[in-house]
Amino acid sequence: MIAKYLEVVEDIKEQLANGVLLAGSKLPSVRQLSEQFSCSKNTVIRAYNELEKEHLIFSKPKSGYYVVNNIEQPTTNQQVIDFLSAGPDKSIMPYIEFQHCINQAIDTYKEELFSYSDQQGLYSLRVQLAKYLQDLQVFTEPDRLFVVSGSQQALHLLAAMPFPNGKNNILIEQPTYFGFIESVHLQQATTFGIDLTMEGIDLDRLDYIFRNNDIKFFYTVPRFHNPLGHSYTNDEKRKIVELAEKYDVYIVEDDFLGDLDPNKKADPFFSFNPTGRVIYIKSFSKVFLPGLRVATVVLPTIMTNHFLRYKFSADFNSSVLSQGALDIYLKSGMFNSHIKKIKELYVRKMSVLQEACESLLPTSTNYTKPVSGFYLSVVLPDNVSARQVVHLLKEKNILMDDAARMYLPEFKKDNLIRLSISQVDEPLIYTGIEELALCISSFERKMRYPNPIHLL
Ligand SMILES: Cc1ncc(COP(=O)(O)O)c(C=O)c1O
Image 1 (cartoon, rainbow, N blue to C red):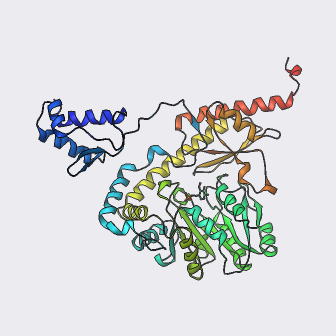
Image 2: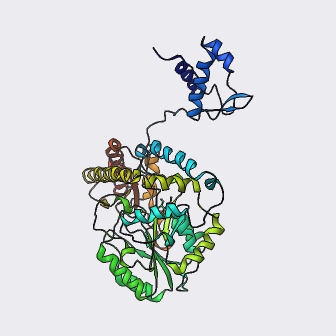
Image 3: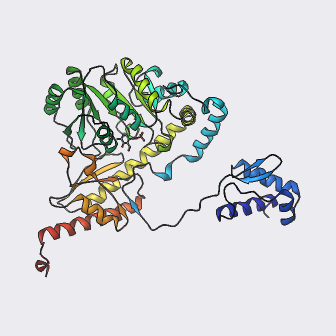
């Protein structure tokens, strides 16, 4: 038999879920409920204490108990196959473990969490970050680390601020991460592009651009590139760093998915010049929780004062609650076990996606073959438009991304579709690719036989 106080708890939870009790509304008094459930007042108080512990209700002295928030009921939507969203796989986000860290952070840091704080980031977190970066072959000290509100903020500030080389222009792989294109576009920065394929970039071309175009920095996504999935070899990275050194160009390395690399021997650009030529950025959004808005950037000492001024003028400091909780999450070792789990997940999903592409896509269609990460790109046959394919599939609740916005205007292409595996349920990958294949074939048929009379 279920204990009486739990009956009360369940009844109130049901009313919260049904929307009978709304945020802020007053709950019945202890006396009223004890009469309604024919139980003692102590039983009702125990039930209310339980609900308070779960943060569902709160008490106001001399007034009674009130609802914190009503519980959202998940709506049953039509099935969507989502190759578009780029947040991490929701099924594996460590919500419960992280909740402990948030509670622990509030206890540990108390008032520090809710006031203005060190612009560079909590020192204790920077110590943890310096340790964690060693696993990614980034050896540095807490003094060179800055906590930022997502790597997007670091990119935005770096695009805006002057660099020690006194140069003005930014070089970007083509295609690249849309958020950076948007940032340089809004800041009206002068940009140059360099073609990137799964074979890498043309190093002679890079040499030419570095030599002739007053390049402040080269922005690169070194592993599991967004949108291609490309990763550089160590040899390529070493050569690019040498060129950067030769022409006094900085490299901004956005290693957003570095933790997922199954190749233990893959080194970041940073490791080829740890003293300052390479600015290393590590986001926690793809491998952990994007809502935390925490990333870290390793800067050369010569740039730290300037960067602090730009950071201060953007938002003073990044959320200290997020920083405190992440500090505890890293310190406790929970982060390492989480990474182990997700590493396997993304390698598996990526291989399922490639098997599906291999067996279902028409032979006229190419696709990139990353070993892990979030993204794979499909190169459509001539005359099939990515925009039209994406539009048609959307009507069937299959979401994919047209990569046109990931190019600078002079490099724009309409034949690349970006697939993100992070939020697609594994069993639906084949179904989604089957629909993509059908759609491509039907456009190809239309191009071959534009006049329907030929189909008769
Ligand atoms: C390559 C790349 N860099 C940076 C970001 C921004 O990440 P954050 O959430 O850390 O700002 C993204 C987000 O999609 C990304 O794909």
